[in-house]
Length: 183
Image (cartoon, rainbow, N blue to C red; front, side):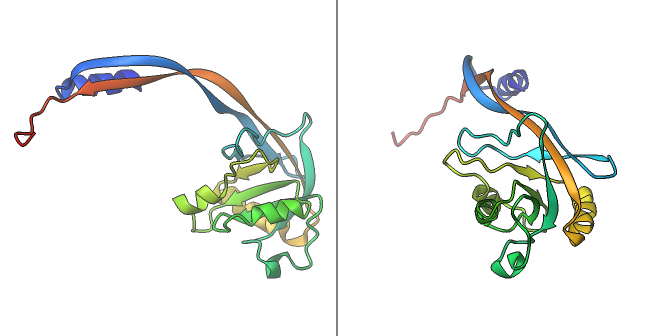
């Protein structure tokens, strides 16, 4: 990507093109999945870490009964066995996932409910390193999981690994000379 940008800068006629390399720590998703009682394995995707806390799960993963908490309003949570669950949650639910975790959910699986936008995404990341394993489930898998969650007795297993790694990054500079007569 950096080579492409440099090439485009040259084609645009920018001058004094320079590049500087630097080390950067980034979270690398090593993979995550959900195993259904049938043995079927579905890919899931870890969300950006809460501060430095990734959604890495313990060796061997975790398991819990699958529940649908919708947007996690009080009415939707009423009567649900949240303790020990794996909670399916609509993305357009603000930061209600924090309450669901505080009520004992072991992990949160977000799905697209039509409310996926920048503002909602910003609500999914905390600036403190709170351990709330959060994952994205693709729309097709979400439909199947929502159906499986209806009885509240389907037990699923999750496994996930996300590590911080130092990688090489680059800044690329180019200058476009110009003249402002007023200056």
